Amino acid sequence: MDNDSSFRIVAALREWIAGRAPGARLPTSRVLVAEYGASPVTVQKALRTLAAQGLIETRPGAGTFVRAVRTARPLDFSWQTTAMRSPNSHLGGLSPALRAAPQGSIALHSGYPDRELLPERLVRSALARAARSEAALTRSPVAGLPELQSWFAQELGSATPVGVTPPLSSDVIVLPGSQSGLATIFRALVTAGAPLLMESPTYWGAIQAAAQAGVDVVPVPSGSEGPDPGELARAFQETGSRVFYAQPTYANPTGAQWSESTTTQILDVVRAHGAFLVEDDWAHDFGIDTDPHPVAARDDAGHVVYVRSLTKSVSPSLRVAAIIARGPAKERILADRSAESMYVSGLLQAAVLDVVTQPGWQTHLRNLRPQLRARRDLLLTSLREHAPDAHITTVPAGGLNLWARLPDGTNLERLVADCEAAGVLIAAGSSWFPAEATGPFIRLNYSGPNPGAFPDGARIIGQALLSNH
Image (cartoon, rainbow, N blue to C red):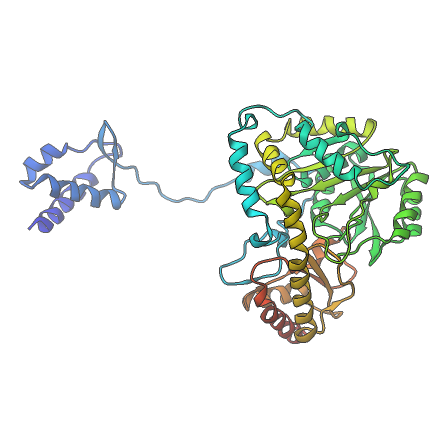
């Protein structure tokens, strides 16, 4: 009987609402109880039904009102085109490395290590302690927490050979991630419209940062041991550039590491042209078969501007990195940095400092090596068995990625789509070239989730390659 009464009240109130303007107030529950001869419970049930249908809304302390019905209509934003004019730089779309992976897919496209490769216990404990510290409530200095500056300086200083002056903590600028630092460096040292030399292929984020800064990128081809010093010297000479961006250690995407000879020759070229080398040491913590040897440790004349990130190795939620620069270059970078973001969250800095100064941090890094090696070798073996057309010319001695050359004529767009349709996400290599790609490539991350699925992923890639021709 209550249900029948509820339906009767709903039907009657729908007719009442149809004849009222939006915002009209409904009779009170007490009036409705008396009018329909129903219990308060039945009246409330009827009102909940009408609210679920979007016909009424309750405002606490005011009553129940007829809800305005909002009809969908096309929106016109064309006025913004005139207001914004042409963009100063042509930024590409979202990198394939940042795409979210659907549930159950085999994710080989990402640029970040899986959660099980992170120091989770250290991170959680550090965040808890940081939340109870003064850093949770105070503003950080513009250049960063002095203790964290000191840690970055000491780490690089420990690699400095005899005869080279190690950096000071005052040479360190803490950043909210290295991506923002690259944009700052390019704005401060290159300036809009001026040429920037850049390894090719290279990190897609550096290409984006250069576009954002409005600089003119000049690609310098790079091989398994880095760029050819003669080619670099010619590029400096022909363009008049004074800045070269590179990743000497476990380069993204190729995994290349500069040899001792290449490092010496490139430093000589940079010094001879009175130029800067922007060294992006993104994979410092991901050595497998070799150790990182920062180029910046061999320079005390301010030619090398060193970028050191902790985001990937500590946690993607703790976006903290640092620039180490000397002389007027450091002051110019700091000025741009302060205008960009004022300062980095002291809470995040305190948490990161806590992690990297715990004894467990070094233990974590030692345990990380064999895990990365096992994943790299499993994916490499799987590709050689199931996708032999994906040629790995350089087995990386560290980092997170394999860089595979595909047969000429491969339709990358179709290959990526076919793999995704079969449940495997891969990244087309075109995003890693600052100019035209030199061939069809794909980048595969071996540090992602579920390494047990690598053989299946390689099999799907191999099948997609066979059907691509």
